[in-house]
Image (tube, rainbow, N blue to C red; front, side, top):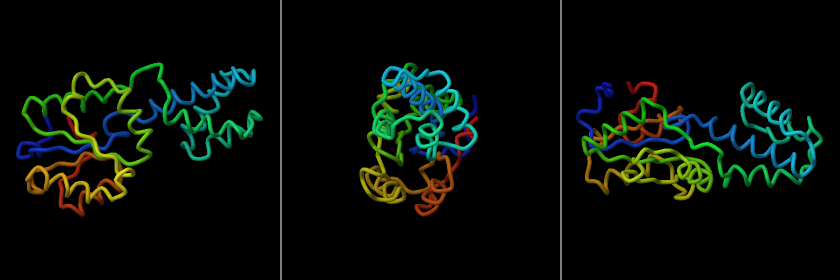
Length: 201
């Protein structure tokens, strides 16, 4: 495998988590599976059609208001919203989350080359930590430093700047691998090179 050509002069790489290191749907679909199983146990409503509905709705329209739509479609009491949200934070997944293969190989190369690896992730810190704990890192977990944007309550670009200062690195020595316009904008505010994970080959 050939790494992205911009990495040769970098000493540190910062990754987002969702849809950068792994497909976020791999986590969410397992949460929906567990929720459907929970409703079957609690309300004697068959899990399979609930899961099929949630999967189709998610794939077509995303996760927004998915509980409300499912509640309406299957007459599920709104009191179970709490259980739905709690599962997002602490679900014990049936299957480990797997890194994108190209990203796994890239991160392994970074370790061999003794480049530092950071994860700076947005979103509910409890949920993001749960994802990290249930990811198959293939030994990479020993080389990761993680920051949670929502826990620190400062924007990503400030976290990036703090990482630069702590590691005594210039902006030219850092690469950010992100997933969306927000990640790109935050990188630009710190004058950091930015790519999406699909650009790693």
